[in-house]
Length: 235
Image 1: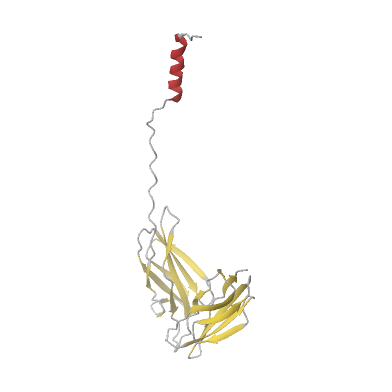
Image 2 (image 1 turned 180 degrees about the horizontal axis):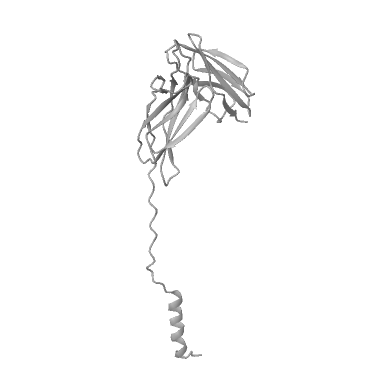
């Protein structure tokens, strides 16, 4: 059967209009990537030193100006200070490279600076520095509380024999000895042993949460207690 030609043209036109397109739609430009901020370099207070340059505001407090070098690709900095005796942390943000903070005198602290940038969630963290904020004259300072533990806080390790490790330092350069407490209770009260090294061996049960703590004592008899470290063993 033949189809009349008058029906063919409209059908072709309909096909052209239905399937055609301009083909000129622009491809969206990708958003430019925001450069990742780099870690700041700490300047003051000096690492493992006594800070004597604070402005005394009372018998118990002084104001210390923390300083660091500007880091690339950074819009803001967060200064976090930890009281090494109480474990309490305080944080403050600034777009500058220094910040004045009121601290307790005669107290050991650690501090870090976190760099951040607008348009990205990526951050960069500086080294951790420790210092002793000067108080009344002291002939011999207590050692810094033990830090940088292994196992690290909250991680899981294999049960069995393990070497607990940490770092220690003393402003006066005195030799240090350590008493290590390890327990399944918090706070730990079971003495694992004493050592002049910064490590001690322990035997761990499987599928158990352990808490441990280090008491550092210098040759003058001054001592300091670390925060309580925690880890878990695998099943």
